[in-house]
Length: 184
Image (cartoon, rainbow, N blue to C red):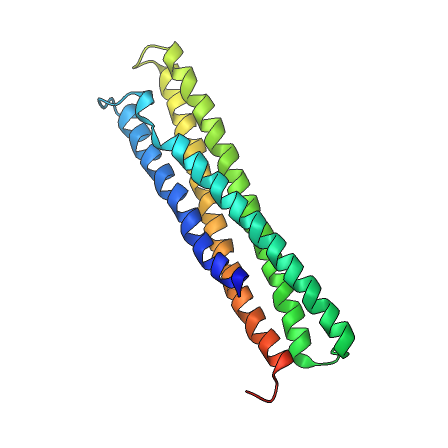
């Protein structure tokens, strides 16, 4: 149950940096069009990094919690001889799904962080060139492209988090059926 609650909260944890990354892209677009902003206006990027780090830590915590719960449930299945029970087989499948989606979400968060940091480094380069030059424009474009890749990776992490949440809910239902088949 703790994993299910945590997976639901994780979605918002991943959604926040996604919004901040979108704000960064907007500022870069304004800069490219000659707007009044400067590269220093991309203030959301550091806070997006902090939120991505929070999401990564929460994912790691939930994976560990899920792993522990799965191990305990595995011990019960051996003790109770549940190998042939259909609900046990359903639970095993949903448990594997939860683990797989957690890995996808973690990979997405890590990728988003890497792209974000690369875009921050790319933003340093335009300062070496005059504003309307081709080199300045190329570096700004690259920074924006990297931020968009960070947004894509963040969106993939959000999707995987939703899939993880759904798999955990199925897993909890299956566990309930394994332990209390006569109730339902």
